[in-house]
Image 1 (cartoon, rainbow, N blue to C red):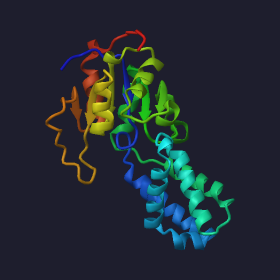
Image 2 (image 1 turned 135 degrees about the vertical axis):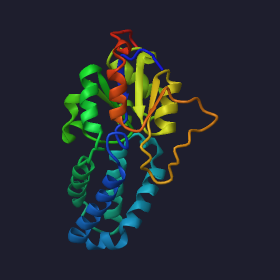
Image 3 (image 1 turned 90 degrees about the vertical axis):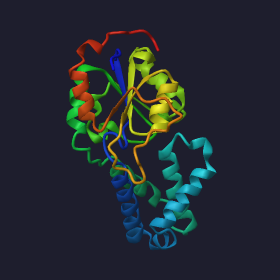
Length: 246
């Protein structure tokens, strides 16, 4: 399939790196921290208990669904408060969370492919998560970043995709959104008028790779970013210099 591409918008978690190992490391790291600094908190909220508390905090603050960092901080503060611990530990615990959140292990294909793609087209990160591109060390590969927090609403809100297109001065119909999630990435971007590329590696539990029959297919479907980079390499005429405002 051929179509003009002026820029890419790119999901982060489970597209550039798997999130599950990060989430597990955060949970274990916080539990170990509480064991050492606040045993009462660790006892009252072991890993499963802290996970349940986090879900409760998310339910209690629906207006913050776009701000995962604030929700995490509130979870830590509530755990300390409800276990009678020193509230001053919240800052140290949250710093630990941030450190582990940004310690990522890229998919084997992802970083080299991203570097190739960034040499050809402007790339804008579009994420519901709270990864820090500078802390990870890849901010130089992006023309910008639009997060659910900065936009004020998470994917699949069409506005977050339009904001990403506008940030590089490109019309949505010439921008290719790349991501792993069918609902948040593929359907959200398509409904916002962008082209779509589904990166399906088949590495997530319970993911059978079956596209919903009642939904329009993505424009492209690859099992790695490397394949997308190859596709762009052999389709140079598809790259445009369209600077129409989104």
